[in-house]
Image (tube, rainbow, N blue to C red):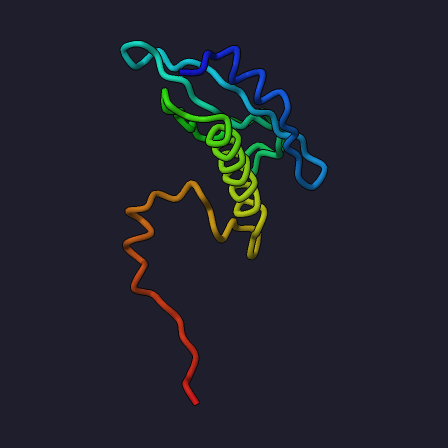
Amino acid sequence: MKSLKEIRKLLSRIKSQCLGKEFTIRCEVDNKFDAGRLFLQVCYKAHCNKTGGEQEWHGRKFYLSDYMTDDEIVKTTYVAFESAVKHEVMEGFTVDGIVLFNPHINFEELLKISHEEVSRKSI
């Protein structure tokens, strides 16, 4: 099992940025579990669609196995980064000022309209 210090040292080698925005990766211990469990989380500053201001955001937590290799940690970090970027892309796409692919919509609400498919006429 890698220590928090070892993982942070590995993460210090990673730079994650996209479209001029810098993303940081934090590794912490979640003490909600018995012995604590390590997780990675992407943090970044971005525009808030509701307030209009800029604020710090934290992506979802990606928990690490006690047996993760350096390779798995780096690749999990990439997945965390990619998820945060995709979240911003979804929020940045609007139609008539409304976020069309809102990542905050509850999945149960999406299920209610999932039958509303569109298709084109076959030739």
